[in-house]
Length: 261
Image (cartoon, rainbow, N blue to C red; front, side, top):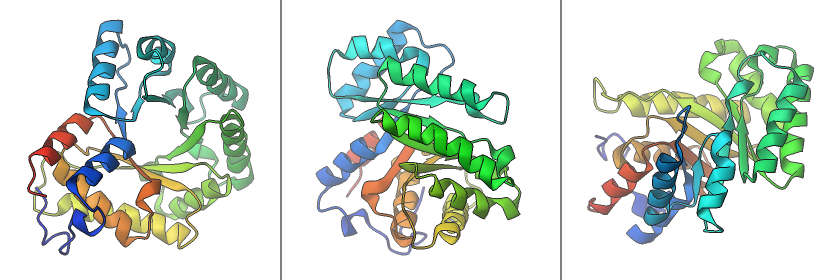
């Protein structure tokens, strides 16, 4: 639970004219994520139908489910995102990674998120070459590109370099993960954790925010979403360029529906 005191008096009504406008932002800017390793047709269909019922605009599902999802949606207004999980580390060549992207593109996906090879961060030219070629492939196909930086796995001295280097490759979004706790040991602990990572991104980019920002984490309720909005506005991010990746989108909407806002 997050109190207004911990958010320095922040209230969503400062930036949204009404509860309905706030709800529309949530439905448009949460990337509703459902990435089980095996997604049977019935579970996929139930998930898609529920996302449509709630009014979400985008869902993130395994690349192996994209074609089937396109069939089930039959032109309904729900965009599909996929995450190429094989991009972690340096287990595959750049050609392998390009092939994975091409497969996703052919399946009819709208957005592709990938993990740059962080083992190359200290070799900036190689890091930028790999990332730039993948981003170009995605964007040349008319799709949204998202570079997922696992900066929590980098040594402190490499975080700024990774963020600055990936921005030079011009993805549409830089994605970061914030390790939010399911149970805080004190009120505001998750806010402090989130602030630490927003601060690191801001320090690396300053006012030169040439991409959007996507935040992952255990954003499992309306109350865990509010600190992210508070921090995004404090650090100068346009909320039109902010996405939140979470599997708890339904719970967040339900929480808003019963809130006093």
